[in-house]
Image 1 (cartoon, rainbow, N blue to C red):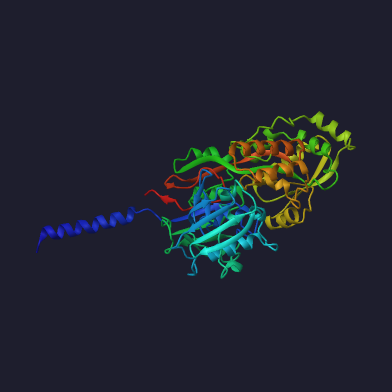
Image 2 (cartoon, one colour):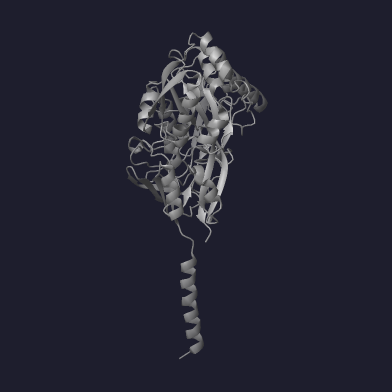
Amino acid sequence: MNVFASALGAAAIVLASASGALSARTDLVLGVVLEPPHLDPTAGAAAAIDEIVYANIFEGLTRIGPKGEVLPALAESWEVSDDGKTYTFHLRQNATFHDGTSFDAEDVKFSLERAMAEDSTNAQKVLFSAIESVEVVDAATVRVSLKHPQGSFLYNLGWGDAVIVAPESAEGNKEKPIGTGPFKFQNWARGSSVTIVKNPDYWGEPVALERAEFRFIPDAAASVTALLSGDVQALPNMQAGDALPQIEADSRFKVVIGATEGETILAMNNGKEPLNDLKVRQAISHALNRDEIILGASSGHGVPIGSHFSPANEAYVDLTGLYPHDVEKAKQLLAEAGYPDGFSATLKLPPPNYARQGGEIIASQLREIGIELEIIPMEWAQWLEQVFTNKDYDLTIISHTEPNDINIYAREDYYFNYQNPEFNAVIEELELTADPAKRNELYGQAQRIIAEDAVNGFLFQLPKIGVWDAKLEGLWENSPIQANDLTKVRWTE
């Protein structure tokens, strides 16, 4: 018997066992606040959809990276004509959909024409309004012609609303999403979680995770318990509240506070009395104490805003001083508007803590000037139907997490019921402008118009309070787009 060889064999077995024991885990449970109404990002406005499927299950021609940059995705490259009106996209030739169907130029044509169609249910149909035509040059090449140059076109194609879907599976994407991404949909346990698994046939760099579960935890206290017990390993947007200092002191976790594109507003129905009166809206704006609201609704981490624009954007204009907190001024404006004793209104609140907690604070602040609010808590689906779709509301609190979305104030049928031809003209010029400096100037004009019109009560930029296991890496610090991109996430042991 060769004792030396036997010893080497035994050592190899021990080393192999140790290696297996120390190998990094490949599963992940993330806690998310809201359950999406469905899983098709091309047919719904809820951020909760993109927070699960964006970059994980579905991909667009371009994608938005962690710093807000435009990156190639299903289009590996493109050329733009000298007049800025023609984009020629060269597509990935080894991509397939999760059901095995091929990806090619016909899918791109189908997806873009579907999104821009007259009967489109796309919540961001305006993203595609500049498109004149979509032409299949060959299986790997698409030519998109625009009605006019559009400086934001490549960025727009990176939104979740612009992902590419297949005609064979598009109608079923709400319940069983089928994309080209690095993860495949596995299961949706209603009221509990959505599970995705690694796509072994992905065209790009394979992901490290074999399985990820998005678990719905709307209750802040329950999310803290789930984290501390190890039931969840990451809360990308944690409602930490008073528990944050305890978590920060625990070496098992990383606490990463970043920025989002979430303009948190007290939205007002500008088409409904008495909120159709500028002086009433100005009175409400003066009654709001942002510092109190930020402390109570975002654990003090929100950044004050005075218009619908992110402070992280280079075109941001600080308009927070336009309507300073001034109760006497607010009462004076109400009296001038014909409401010396105030009035009653409803405040419909969706589930997130920033809305529910912020609502209580705002109701107390408006009570000081004679406005009595009936608080009506709503589930997400109710809010989308009654407030967002049917415009059946007086006031509501919501974070608009879509990037650079100030153009929503120019939409004819948007739930704010706001119309201003001067603002619309600025947005129209912005659409035609590619020069960055000129675009920033126009963004500044747009911010000032809606701030002066007190269209909504502009509160704060929603912070991204990310908390996750200290051994995890690759989760985004900031949220330039509403997403939990897992493509670079891995365990370090």
